[in-house]
Amino acid sequence: MDIDILDTLYLFQKEHQMAVKTLLMIGGSGMAGGWIKRWTESFSDRVQIVGLCDVLPEVLENQGQTLGLGQDQLFTDFQEAVEKIRADFCGVATPPPFHSPAVIAALEAGMPVICEKPIGDTLEAAKAMVQVSQKTGLPCTIIQNYRYARNKQEIIRIRDEGRLGRLQHIMGRYACDYREYGAWGKNWRHDMEFGLLFEGSVHHFDMLRFLSGGDCETLTGFGWNPEWSSFKHPSSGLYLMRMDNGVHTCYEGNSSAAGITNCWHREHYRLEFEAGCVEIAGGNTVTIHRIGQDPEVYEAPEIPYEGHDHLFDEFLNWLDGGAPSDTRIEDNIKSFALVIAAMETTLDGQPKQIADYLSDLA
Image (cartoon, rainbow, N blue to C red; front, side):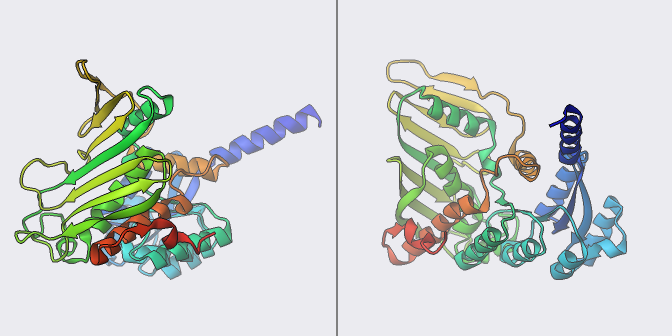
């Protein structure tokens, strides 16, 4: 091939990959408001919001003014939004029951999607999203921002580099003091069925998969609601998981904690390895324990992007031809299945085989 043609092709590809991506944003306040702030402040050179949908007219008006959008770019109905806005991709950050219909509509309209966790409110809704993503062949990823913190990434390096030998088991603990009604931000979290699992453990089960490097084969455990709880359904639970790589995990979830708390971004994880153990909780501190030695305490190294920023960057790179997101929907449904299994083992006390929940997916 002529060298000039090669140069032209290279420049075209580079220009195409660096082109600003257009975004249709479904959701405008709460978590979605945080998304908009991140897109406009941290990714303004790569993303332009060209459409916004929210059920609240006042949210649309305020965000529309901030983003410089016209009335023809603002919608209260997501179906109308995906029909009228032709964007490079769609972001969905609505309450979980509305994830599936919005994601499916966007995919069927030809837009890749990045969606807030959890995938949906039911396993059936989540599977429908996976199936449409597979049918269209379009990128679809789910936010799991807790993976991308400095201390978690350091644990992955310790594990993968074999610094402490083989991994045996993991203990994970989440505990927040939500004994007062409404303390968990919104009253509906105290009223909903299995709020601990759907609003809390969905993060932590995914983290245990991530840290273990395996997928869950069997899950068993118990959930309960202490008499002093402010919740209508189980606010506490203990769950055991056997992973397919031989690692075992144990999870304690407690939204009625009254003593030592390990609340959001301060969850405690202890990983038992062949030649020592590692502990992390709040901040970026990593502690390594070895029998007969003083603890090794240090700050985890910096990482290029943390939390949502990592996932946004990774997704944009995927759209430009890079590697698929680690939390793409085909993988993330394996974490969501653990939430459903934990709910069902709480109800019937029987161990659950996770393959049974996903057997009808390709």
